[in-house]
Length: 229
Image 1 (cartoon, rainbow, N blue to C red):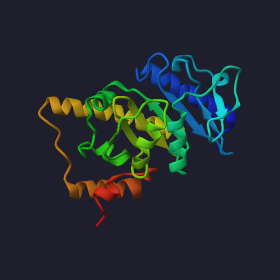
Image 2: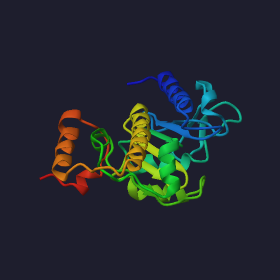
Image 3: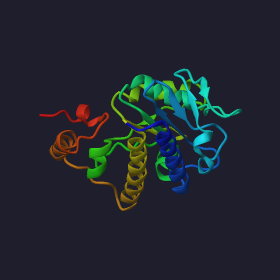
């Protein structure tokens, strides 16, 4: 099990990578981790992810109240979205919210990424839904994402960005990487005339591999959309 300082360092590393990859600008994006005692570490509001350091992180309770943090630091107002993920999903211990440009382009265009057209994406995350619009910092966003969390670990937020969850922070981060790469590939495929979806019987085989060979954690909509024979 990771110790407290290691988790803090990992959050900072993820924040710096997101900024370097151009997934966030200015004060965009937020990251959180559920700790073993049921409290949470979260990135503070009003600070670029490129400037995040361990001492700037805040520890909060399940209502978002600050339990530990430097004077004047408080969590992002979007923490409500993170906390809803943790409430809905006991298996989730890491949440990442960012604005990766291509994936967010789909969200801004009002398009989901629901094709089963790339092997790695089918195995890792399945289809990616577009959740209804919600005003940031309000309860509208948590309410909008809640119905999708039972079957999805990756969401596009309409006119906003993307959200990923995982059994740990790195898994949530990797899913954001997978999402953005798939969005780029999907866009390219459509420019070339359209993506070709993988046949259903082959998708069934990939889902068996996901479960039995790769042992991927989390939820997958394919188990409902493509029931096992």
